[in-house]
Amino acid sequence: MRLKFVLFVAYNNAIYLMAESQLLILNKKQIQQKINRIAYQILEDNLDEKEIVLAGIWDRGYKLAIRLKTVLSRISSLKITLLNIELDRLDTKLVASTDLDESQWKGKVIILVDDVLNSGKTLAYGLGVFLNTPHKKIRTVVLVDRSHKIFPIATDFVGLQMATVLKEHVDVVLDVDGEEDSVYLS
Image (cartoon, rainbow, N blue to C red):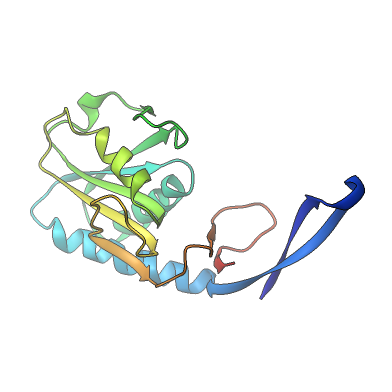
C-alpha cells in the first residue's frame, strides 16, 4: 500500500493535506511479465508479417509500446516502427497528432497501445487516426482493462482485466523518476 497526498481547500480557506491510500495491483516484475506475454501474443498474431507499427498513445501508452518493441526485437525478426499519438482527451472531437507521416504506417499492421482502458474513448480516438489510411489490420493492447466501456472498443491483448467501481482510479507508473514501475488502485 502506498500513500498519495491530495491537497484541498476547506473551511476558512485553510489548506489541508490528506492521505489517500493506494492498493498495489501490479509490481515491476508483474508488469514485465504482462509485457512479455503480450509481446508473444502479438508475435503469434503476426507470424506471417515482416513489419508492424506499434502506435502508443502519449504518454504511458507510448512508454508501454517502447517496452513491447524491446521484447519483440529480442524474440523476433519483425521490423518494428514506433508511432507516437498525442490526443486532446478533453476535446469532444478527434484532435490528434503523430510523430510520423501516414506513409510510414500505410498498408501495415497497426498495434494501438494504451495503459488503461476505462470508457474506451481514448482508444476510439486513437483508432480514428487510422480510419482514412489503408492498413492490413489494427489490434489493440492495454495493460489494464477496467471493463467500464461506453464506446464499442474491444481489446485484443490485455495484461490484466479487472472489475472496478467507477469511483476507483487505476494509476499506472512507468518510467517515472524516483518511482518504481507499478499499477495502483485508489
